[in-house]
Image (tube, rainbow, N blue to C red; front, side):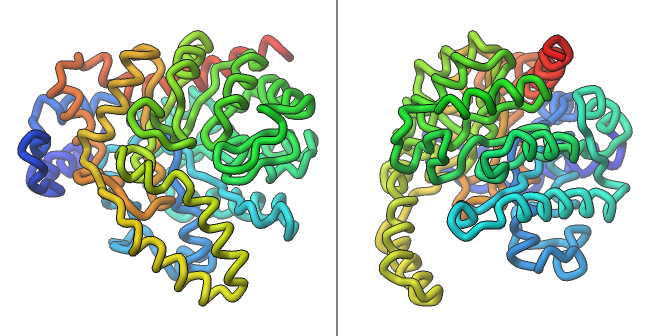
Length: 404
């Protein structure tokens, strides 16, 4: 942690605060919390900035330069420094439409290229990391350790060879599905014909174990989660998921799976999206993937679809929740699975509604303060902020060495 980073964190004492409900007061950052935050590795499991750059700026950092303030995004370099981020899994997201249109592998390769170009363009801020030791080394240099995670197993196009090549290119986790069910794994938000994983799906899991890639159980069905945890030899992660007990959305992790994750030594990294963490919002958004499928079927014209989608959102408003909503999920995982099995997976720049005091990447210190306010010790807070994620990555590497 550099001196300049420390000064930017101190600035958060005066920004990013707002009035919350009386029984859920505004979190006010103290010097004690800043000291803990500055001593921690803040390791976020999922940020969709690369896809925003692709969609909003034709993959060009000339058009959308994150060295400058970017108010339309959740992420830019100044706010990353204010938030004290130490390591980030950048998402190489692959839309499910490629399952029918083709091009999933090509698109994944282009997103991997975009992430590496981003790191190369801003060398004073980022450095690539491929191992747990890399993460530690890069962070000690004062930079943000940048790792790659593929979002959507359809990117491998049913090929273990493609999976291996993604690993060669630096991919260190793969989210097994996105919104749609694959030939070999059920999604949480689609039909579930396999009842979890198929035989080929189990081969994917074991090959990821052998390679040292973390298996990401976000987006997959609860039964598929159980199958993964039965088959895997390595710790798993849920890179951006929350708890079903608090917010009953199918994207969230049920308690029995949380207990299995604890036995597996895995980590559930809590998503910040209001539609997954705020109970009322989760109830309203739980069928949103099916709604969007239906609207696209009814409105093949993109402009008509967007108009219908905007109207649906207007008709179904969702409460944002607050930072306390997210801390409730973190605390539920601690109580159900243990302090060693929870982390942060914000989903910044992949969602359109965030809780108060978690509006962007500058806001991580509020999590430190909120945990401190609830009585957690500094060592346990450091585990939540990133120590657990680093440990899971290191253990996956160890299993890979043993398998080889």
